[in-house]
Structure formats: structure tokens, C-alpha cells
Image (cartoon, rainbow, N blue to C red; front, top):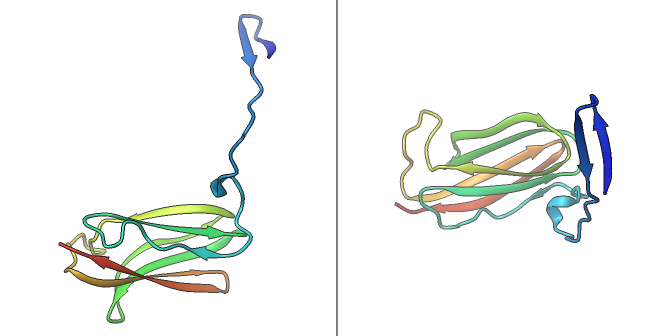
Length: 120
């Protein structure tokens, strides 16, 4: 443990932190990744996880029958792992119907799609 005195009145003790996990969340992705949502089927909320190996503009849109339902992400993001939740509603906040939906990610030159089932 190291001790530091700050402003003459405050002592700060620092212990060494060792990371013993090799959890993927601690490592940057080596390629663009879109994982299957969980839970699937879902009601009322599902989580979509994705990884970016480099800073990218990201767009994730859920669509059914070619129509845009909602845009969950539309921003520039740093390299790393991300989770985004969808609560089964449209951009206007209206609940969607039971059925099959698609989450499509576009990041850099990467594009991928997963299928999601919403049950009421």
C-alpha cells in the first residue's frame, strides 16, 4: 500500500489492484461483432451487445418487413464493448406487436443482422 498526503490534511492510501479475470469485457474486440440479443424471445426488454475494434459511427435499427421501428443508436463511439436495450416500443413510444424483428448494426464498413422475437 502506498500513502500520499494531499493538501497537508488528507491522506490517500492506494492498494494495488490485480485483475484476475480474462472476461472479454476487459479486452478490446479484435473485429466488429454483433451478438445475439438476450433474452430471446423477449418481453418486455432485450439486450443487444456489440463490439467495435476501432472508433466508429454506429447505427442500430430494429425493423420488421423493411420498415424502421426505432433507431437505438446513432452516434460515434470509441472502440470497446457495448450493450443497448430495446423495450419493444417504436420511436414514438408505442408498443410493437408480437412478432419477428431484426436488429441491424452498421459501423464503419461492417454490417450484420440478428433476429429477435417479441412475445406479448
